[in-house]
Length: 282
Length: 331
Image (cartoon, rainbow over all chains, first blue to last red; front, side):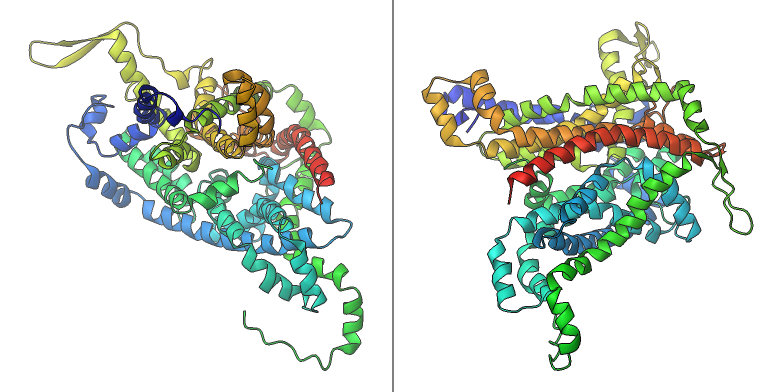
């Protein structure tokens, strides 16, 4: 292990390290702690500039209730769920199929097609913006939930396919070979042999795509207008305009927007990190 | 799924052709849905944007559904060349690219600091990773407030150092300050640095997690061998560990380049490109131009997008080339 394990050094060093850890963490998360603290303060503290001091009054419930009663926050949260969940289902399913095709079959365009998906994943959103917006307006998908999840699903299919293809490629090929010799149909090999084996990849992709799409802000601005289809990220911005300088309410709303991906991360931590660090080790 | 197997009695005639070409046809069935989706929403629009960048268009259609776009040739690109906002955005993009790279060494540094086994370490690692999980909108809001000279953290730190708290005879607290606290986001010189600093926070977390995974997989026998040879500290890091972290570094650089060029959310939240366009980057300037309050300028916006795309394409080609080298080496 590098650096040298701390348990092999002197007790004083070990103690120093363990004492310093929480301090480093607090410094690192200072901005987050500050808004968490602010979200339970009253307006008085905000105006007197009390940022790190003890709150003069605790308004946890009042602030969070205010966010829901004085704004469309509940609608925004629901919209985010209704955009995110179908995106995850569609993009992961499509990627399972496409990844299987690109990993298992040897045909001439397999690699170019694979690179197409990879490249699509890196392009700037702006190059898609005008045509996708125009297309959505033309087809009546502008300012709808479906308009957003269809686009997200298509775009995220690139990343998911990259991931799935590499995952399936790493499976033992003999499994497929022997299934073919047995005379099993191709789709059955996919369904009964490969799909059960890629479950970890599906889990990893599901949490990652959930987080990516939940946190999307750009497309929310490009593809929506009113309150009815806006996800929480765009909603929080709108709230920021509405609650000018009511930082306790803005903080509460921001934390609400952050909770679902954070919860997802904590519940599925192993999969999340396995997904993100794909390729970081050989 | 519990699909019953089709009885194989009536297949022979069509099965022979299918059977013969099974391995050539099957992949297309599996690929079709993803390809169709991807073609409609990703590949098609890229070419459409390229095409639209030669038009002037406000996004409207005539009553019979004809587009009102007019062909202007390379006019949009000529205009870009003379557009000071475009050059400001481009310079800021370079600034983002260069400064964002700090996330890679910073992430490595934190990963080295955290790569220990003490009780509760797993929790520490995930808490350090936190900034990456939350939305950039939220990060932007947090830092916007952080930098706020009146209500925020910068303001209160400034007060602590440069202000004297006085209580007047009726008991009201007033502050006497030397100068006024810095308003980072309203200053054309510093606002971009303020936003980049905010953007680095989640990006460092991302690089950190990549390096933690990389460090986890460093071959321990090589480390031990290095120790026997008397290597430690920087020498060990440079000669033994760093070469083994190459895959992690590659991914960290890729995601950081992409992250820097994609930066949009933070700018839209913190300054909306201001003051006076000084914090704009191409991605935000494009959005602002194409969908503005003064009517839509789809053609000009597309031209900006094409420039950004061309810059990105340089990096994408390099990444793909690297991946291709790996593929050739593989199975």
